[in-house]
Amino acid sequence: MATQALAVPGGRPHRLVVLVSDDEKARIVAQARAAAMSVSDFLRNAATRPEEPTEAEELLIREALRDLEEASARSDATLARLEETMAHAANFDEAAYRAQLEAEFEAMDIDWEAVGTRLGFVRDEAA
Image (cartoon, rainbow, N blue to C red):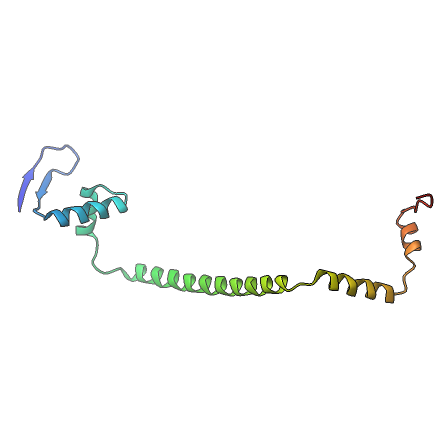
C-alpha cells in the first residue's frame, strides 16, 4: 500500500492508496452513496469504527428492538380490530337496524308532539 503525506493545514495530511477490483470499487461506491457519504468518509468510518457495539449501544439496540416489537404487536392488534370492524360493516343491514330502532322508540310511549313543541318545532298544518 502506498502512502503520501500532503501539506494540508489543519486537515488530513496523509493519503492511502488501496488497490481494489472493479466489483469491489462498485460495491464501495454504492454503499457510500446509500449512506449519503463520500467514499473517503465511508472508508474512514468503516476502518475506524469499533468492531463490536459498546455496552451502551447494545442497551439502546435492545430497547429499540423491544419498542419496535411492542409497536408491531399493537399494530397487529389494531389491524385485526379494523378487519373485524370492516367485516361487521360489510354485513350491516341498515334497513333492519332502522326498523329495530323505530320499534324501540314506539315501545317507549313518547309523546312526540310534546317533545317537538318543547324543542320549538312547529308543525305546519297547512302542508
